[in-house]
Image (cartoon, rainbow, N blue to C red; front, side):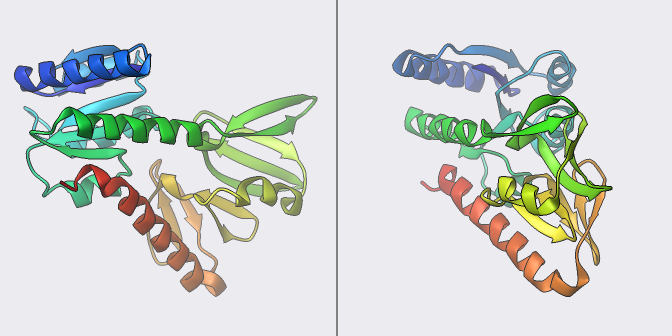
Length: 245
């Protein structure tokens, strides 16, 4: 597991590093940990290194942890973020970013273990994929990489974090491939949106984290927004385990 600790407290970094080493030994997981006391040096490293999880302090030198987290998600949406901070006051904003966990200092090893167990569960969920025929080839697409899908001229277009995949099939045949996953919402005609990539919504559209807008069907607006609200509430409830106690 590639992990990064971003904290301006050397003492806190070393304590967490020790916890991670212990977790790796107990769970037979190789932990490669990079340590940063400067958020700008860390953000420069994100471009060249794929981190599975980042432990992020809320109070840094030039930016808040929220600002750093937003930049991480733009550079690598698959990176999981765990906040480590002395205050609970930023928790609502943190969970709006769909971070994995939120640990309040000083926390013990048991809380770190719970957070990483949560990470293992999330990875298991994110490793699911669908297989699509693209031309003569078959392509596996990670569920976690799909931002939204739409339909045009008998082709399903799957918009992912890295590219657009086009496959010749009807929406009625494609829909069951994603309908089993609670993060996908049928929001407009033949369009499915991954709610994990929704930043907010306006009167007629979902606004995605990449800036794109996805229409909301007017006739089903109340139902769609209720489903979205329930999903966000449930996601937050699961993640608040890191705050309790």
